[in-house]
Every structure is written in C-alpha cells, then in structure tokens.
Image (cartoon, rainbow, N blue to C red):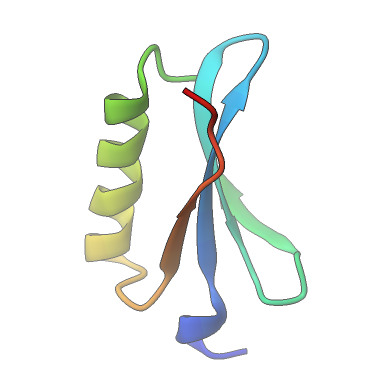
Length: 66
C-alpha cells in the first residue's frame, strides 16, 4: 500500500454531526474521528491538519450532504 492510496472521507453522522474516516485502497479503516464535529468546517480543519502532519499524499473526499 502506498501513501497515495489513502483517502479521507468526510461524512455526516445522524447522531452527532460531521466525522471523517481514513481508508486504504481496499477500504480498510486506518483512522477515524473519535468525536463528531458540530459543523463541517471543524471536521475539514481536523482532516487537513492530519493530512499536513502525517498523510500528505492522502486524497480527501467530501461525502457529506449539506
């Protein structure tokens, strides 16, 4: 698995707001948000911080509606 095969997905959780998940090309979850974010911007900030710090080649996909 190469670092460029990793993908962050931002999604909306019905229970507690916006969350993210980092997956491998095969769909295996590597990391995930431990808490829901009240707004999408906070969630995106979390993703891009992690992307910059540890996963610079990971792609980001926004699957959240709204």
